[in-house]
Image 1 (cartoon, rainbow, N blue to C red):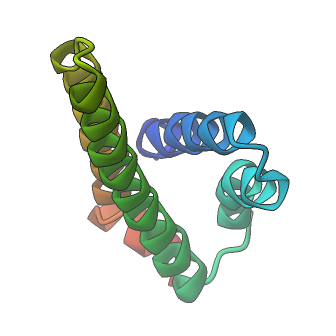
Image 2 (cartoon, one colour):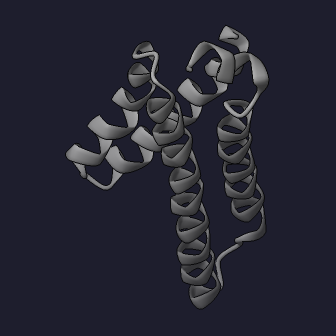
Length: 109
């Protein structure tokens, strides 16, 4: 079960670092503290944290489009950055998906 939660923790820390870069301290706190909610063994908490992971993936998609557009406008290389952010997006989606397993669901009934 712990191996299914570790990717969520890493994805949350990455998202927190992203918000820290933008000086959005409240969102840094939400991102970093969200995995701690899993200490509460309620089904709705599991769904909330999983939903936050999916919202985090949407944040990465938005960031990817904005940065790719900015780089294209100035003629800077963008493809490598696109691949990295697409990987981070996929990882965040996967971290949320891992919370959908039967082992996790049984623990949060």
